[in-house]
Length: 321
Image (cartoon, rainbow, N blue to C red; front, side, top):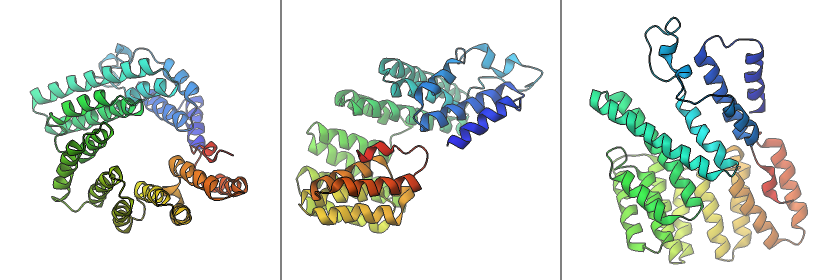
């Protein structure tokens, strides 16, 4: 990721960016790279170098000689999304959320235009974008435990044709209903996910069904049954790190700390680039602290291994050494 950031800077210095949309595309990737490296202040500085994203400066029709047959905005959609996300990472939540809600308004305006013009392919693209941005908004409210807001947003989104059969969103609805104590509502949402899964052979969807079942068992503190559901997921997909992580936690609740540690260690050994994420490493280090007197040395060994294999954007501080 750091080498990519270097290549973007080099392209700029060599004047390889000849057209207006080239500058926006490269800036987008540069902001993305800086964000992945957690250099959010630098990413923000890059974004601030832009004018208003809806400025005529960033429209194709402002350059008729370069783009004789094009019109509309040349701003990449994911640059607009990053423009919303970076303030959130800098703890400027109000600004970030305001931008996200404005982006939703823009997306829905585009949807109305596509619906009016019966442009099916473009319509589907903007429907996916609506779902993507709304999931970002819901995720932020969820991280702040604003459950009632999440429920309202999800129910509104599910009422739209664009996402009425979205299994991930339905699963998120069920998860939030569990958080507020609505067990029957959660079971209903998860049942709808199971119905969607039965229509195809997607491993991802089938695992989502089993993980949802495991959540119901977890609410009832039936950790043995939850482990069984997670094992089905892992057998179906050895790289389902959510199931791997949650199985380990269930084993810890069952006071089988040794096997819990083995589950996480084995996953890191078998598929390090998939299993190596901050949540899993934090949980493994917590288990080391519970299980071993000399946990500092064990965590140091883990940290040294992570330094060798982890990508540039991995947060090594999660080992808490």
